[in-house]
Image (cartoon, rainbow, N blue to C red):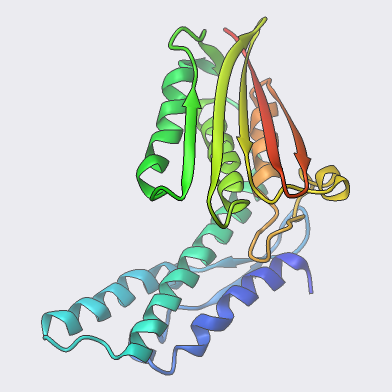
Length: 250
């Protein structure tokens, strides 16, 4: 079975195991269907998957409002279903994004504002586990890129770095002007990669994570290059990874 299908089906396992406890809320929630894909067969998810989240939240809220909290087993199952639906939604989104053939619509973009827009939402969610160290001048020149594509690329890079740090760690982000380009560096203190994994880091469907789709970095690379930029990576096992993105100045 192709890796993409294996990953998606593996994500279904724990949630399906809980359906016996929450069948009423989820009888229609998990309906996979195969779709053609330029890189080979993939598994995309139909709308009922998305319905799983409000159904689970409704089930939990109704019982709470009645003063009858869900039992420990059902509560655990509902939490598992919510987690798996979120994972499946992410997988579906990444497959859909990679299968598309976007056309870059380059415009003048304030890279400082773009970086803040990408990084600020993470500050509250890291709960002190990851130290986010960001530093860049307010005087960075504007760049000529597709804002949407590059924003997605930067988010994927940050997400990849955070996933590489299951425990405590640090993510350092630096940006500076380098001639006719702006250089952005993301350095994490995560698990890192050996030379073999590093050589395949931008290869579609390659992932060192058990639940990874192997599409985050390939999408980032494609989006950056469509905007006339470049991306590179260095990494060392058990020490961390640095991803460098260069974007053309207006």
